[in-house]
Length: 381
Image (cartoon, rainbow, N blue to C red; front, side, top):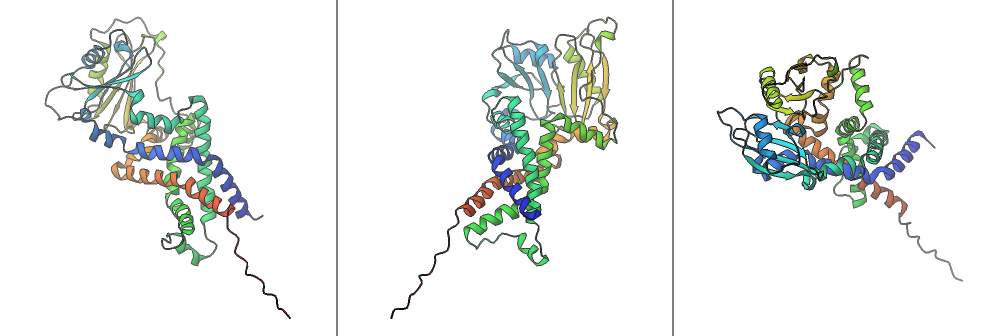
């Protein structure tokens, strides 16, 4: 058996083992790519006209969002997000029944615009299928992660199988013979489209893997930073080493909001995490552009006094940390705007098609019709 034949066997059996998972993950990924654009068209409460007045404080938004849910959650348990001057703000919390509730509010007046139970939201379900296949997370980690690793191997072995032996064969490998029989068209769809999508598919697969396996992300950061270990994403200030402090005279989320507005004045999106029980810092993240997660500053505040404990600005981060921050935007293609999303969408669709066209090729070879034999004429007399 030659090396290429061995690679072909590996490509075949790995593909059959992971094909269904790759198909589901790729198809749901393609659907999810344009989720913000689709939701902006179908959910008018997500956008609004910018106003000249100052935005409402987080404590006002929390009070308005929690008013219809007495006893279900406290302001300290909520996530508050400002998405910029032309988007509504949101307050997120989990009620006592375990339902993830997202409330959209006018960021200038605090008026409730819409409340959603994300458990039944279409794109939440799509995302859950994409990430976990609706399986328990501990199981899904290995089912999805293992299948994506196999998909990476499939792309690499597919390139080996695709590469022509002779130079004059290369031209025909770049195009699909649409006028040929359907088996040949299917073969070309698998090979030609697989070749064109391979590089983007690798980016999508690898950025997905670092979300599943944190050690992969740490390894990439370590390699990019030349062996220097990057600090953790969430700062871990030890509060027990601090002296007793006086409580803030304003609600803690308001103190945090005013501070980060001053420290990151050009950032559109602000995410204020739960302030909790006062035993851990209150965290806040600011993002340069709404719905983009790459360019961000990070803050930690004392949960009682509201004093700024730590800050990490995008400009001061190492190259490895910046690459880590870029991972989600790379995975969805939005690092390059609409054009990047379109490329990610097409690459995801092609990735979903590869297990289908590959299975058809395998099935066709197993059930190939034997050529009809001509009857043998026997001379008489």
